[in-house]
Length: 339
Image (tube, rainbow, N blue to C red; front, side, top):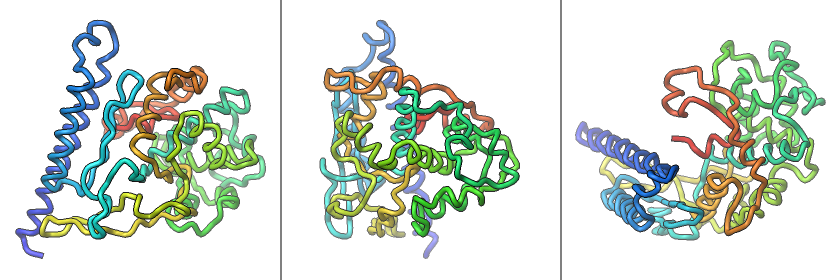
């Protein structure tokens, strides 16, 4: 690879970082709807939609990304949901309204909300010891499991490594979910008391749901979360879906073009911390449910108390870099508001 080709790739990455900053700025400006004065100053839906639509189209046109999916929700409705570019460059598949986007760690917002619904119903509490919620599990001798609560796992303050469970759950699928509790004994102390973001806590949360809901966490989320919110195109599986609908990962070539890479996820690795496919419309609806305290389409589909519980502050960040990234705190549905 020549120095010129390396320079092209670095320049493209810098452009993507600037695009991220612009999009983050737009997102940060939208919440100014709070308060009567701010409500009067806020741009209307048409103005916001045109600005974001233009930015996204330019980004794809200029090759900053092979595809983008953008949705905007304001005042309880979806004002823009549009896909740009190619979901699969090598096969010539365009991104459209039916494209399924892999949402990775945003999956935690569904799992966290599912737990919050159970807590709101009195089935469990965030303060319950994890040993009472998973009575059959064995823990590492240094884990101090008897001092850990469900809240520690939801807020990434359990201070345990996640190598054993997460390696299987997210990457290999070698260990069936029913056997995940057997891997907990391999979770050794990290040696820090910091809030350290990882998948482990939300894999443990799925294990907790499994003990309370005989249908298992996936079926429970389908019935208790997706269906009431009208999320009809949100999946925790790959099987049975048209593979051409899935937006594929891409690799940037030295000449600035993109080539499609394999989508590595299978059913066994579509896990509770990072394993959902969804359309833009479903994701926008999920955002409305969160912003409007469980209300959508003129109906209260979730108790306000459950939504408030899912937004409840559990732990504050302890590292400067993390404070900047996560705005200083963590709650069960915090992943939805990631910057």
